[in-house]
Length: 222
Ligand SMILES: C[S@@+](CC[C@H](N)C(=O)[O-])C[C@H]1O[C@@H](n2cnc3c(N)ncnc32)[C@H](O)[C@@H]1O
Image (cartoon, rainbow, N blue to C red; front, top):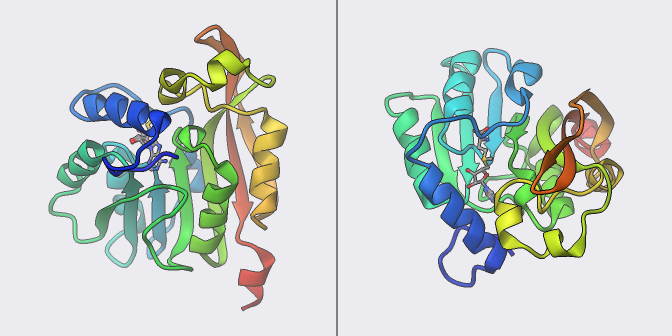
């Protein structure tokens, strides 16, 4: 299980923490799509960024939602949380919490829009992460995610390699399996709005997709 804690972290969590702990103080893109721009948050909206990394999107989201809105970042890696907090220092409408994407330490229905960029592929239980997305979304809310999926089921040698998971491809599942996890969480109107050409990473074929979906119907009926 991937967690942000030092205690009880499995090999994938340890590899993710090691890679992103080191990358927290570097520059260079860690994204795989344009989820934030495509989500186009409006002034006054409450946004949650899952796997916010150094907080670049969070900083821009805070400007988009303005003083009447709020942007909250979530990340498991302590040094990423520190970097994101530094990035948004002085902003009254942005904050960062440390936590796992499969058990987000935020209240239900706290978000009008959830975004995530290149983070959920690291999570061993993607269905659990999307259940959290469904829980976080307020009635009528939306989610836009850019993430890495695989062209086909990856070989066991890759799927069992923690370093491959940390490098954004070992945890990639075929697009149909990924979308099944989104649907199983009850999210509605699921649509892939962008898809890159497949490319090679670590000897396997992956691609980046950006999907959008709406809050579960039950939330919209409340
Ligand atoms: C590729 S980086 C992307 C960062 C940011 N979204 C961006 O576009 O720059 C992935 C981020 O997800 C975080 N992450 C990976 N697995 C996670 C998990 N299970 N729970 C919370 N955060 C996680 C990492 O710490 C890292 O900051």
